[in-house]
Length: 405
Image 1 (spheres, rainbow, N blue to C red):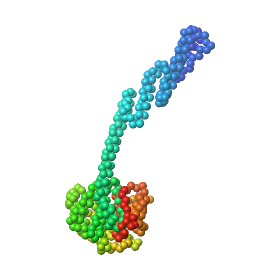
Image 2: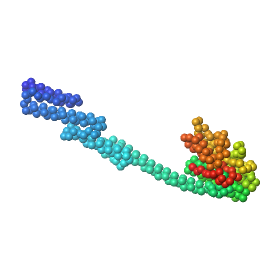
Image 3: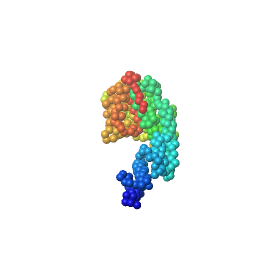
């Protein structure tokens, strides 16, 4: 073998060793060399192998980087085992996009443990979706039930036409914290004038609404039993009825529910209002002066409420300009403002004094806006009820109204 032939053989050996060591190999240069046919064929075959190896190396490098848009070289035996992997990864990418769009019917059947993990993920997503759909369905049914319950609770509220024909001028803000709540107000026309009550039951939402049904029915029974002319006696009898209805006569009972209530008996013939309250007071505004007719500090119906507690009647003379306000504690306890403090009694008194000279419809709007502004982004904490009325104003003359959340 001459020197030129030895050099060619050595170049082939070096090229193959470079490829085996994972480094690029240069193509063999045949120019200017007199080679026999066998050496020429060796050089051409070696160069073809180097080219195919380089193609395979570039493709596998792209595949390792996840560049699946690179097409595998054709007729390259070195990458034949990786072509199926490339196609499978492409299909997996498509499947992943389908899963992302919500198609959880996809299954992966290659890559061993990865397939198991991927399919397990899809199963978990499918289970999660089924749970979410069940929750959505359950929530829809619950909300439908609550909306129907609200219809029922609203039907228990007084007829506004009847109130407007006898109360005089008035407004009502009634805002349950949820669709239904534990606040309710009641009205009854009586020969002398009318009986008006505002009730704040334990809790809000469904439990509170159930308590309003019990409380409202118990108050009706109390009126039937002892009459309407003595609000304090009504409260005493109501206390007994609620404790009896909830079996709260003794401390061993598991429930401890009840209510706060204010009852106003307006006698238009004698121009006087008789008030009895259980932790709900009556506010009286006259000639720019606002004062509270205080309630008794004994709630109604709770386990610790004394069974034979005697509530007290308080009487207020009424002139043409006397305006009364009665509210539950949802307004006073509502947090808001820069320091997230409760609205409080002092701020409530200022709110009433700022608005009591306005027409009732304007009062309702401005008081509502003031409460919402103070609350800001804070959630409503409790049911809210506020009733304002002037028994001797011309019915509807200033613009009566009602807000229901």
